Image 1 (cartoon, rainbow, N blue to C red):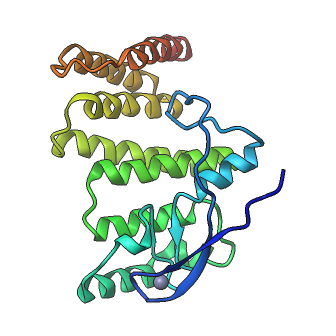
Image 2 (cartoon, rainbow, N blue to C red):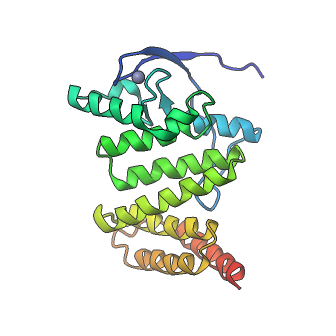
Image 3 (cartoon, rainbow, N blue to C red):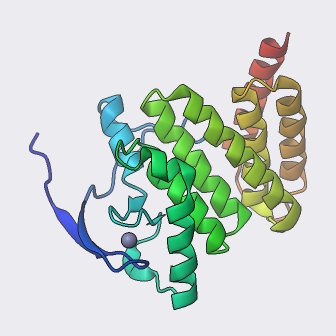
Length: 226
Ligand SMILES: [Zn+2]
C-alpha cells in the first residue's frame, strides 16, 4: 500500500518557528482496550505512530499541544512564560536530542498547566502518553504517565464538577489505571464508585459498555489481588 506523504505547514504559537508535520489523516479504530486505548489496524508500530501524531511539538522551542497550532493564539506574557518553562524543563533538556515517543505529551502537559487546561484535559494528555509508551514498549514511562493521569483525574473529580458520561468514565479510569499500576484494592473501590455514578446518572445515557467493562475489570482485579 502506498504511504501518504502529505504534510501540513504549521507555525509555532510560542516562538513563531514554521515547520512541517506529517498529515496522518483519520484512522479506523477497532474497539478499545480496557483503559480506552484505541485498537488500530496494522502493526503495533503503525498504531504507535498514529497515536503519537496526535500531539504536535515545535522542533525549535519544544512547545507541544493536542490542538491544531492554528487554533492557538497566546498573549505575549503567556508566550514568554511558556518559553522560560520549556527552557528550564529537566526532561526536555535531557531528551530533546533523542526525541522519545512520549516527549511531546510531556511537553504538552507542562505547557497545558501553564495554559490553565482543566485537570481532566491534563489527565487525558497523560493517558494518551501512557498508550504511546505501551505501544512503544516503554514500560517504566507507561507507568509514570499512568500515575500522572490518576493524579489529574482525581483532582478533576474533586474540582471540575464532572457529570454524566464524563464523570462515570473518569471514575472508571482512576480504577483501571490503579489496577494497571498494581493497586488492586484501590482499583476495586474506584470501580464501585464508577458503578454508583452509573446508577445516579440522571441523563439516562446508554453506558452499557462501561457497565460491562466495570464488571469484567472488577473480576480481574479480584483475581489479581488474591
Ligand atoms: Zn516553537
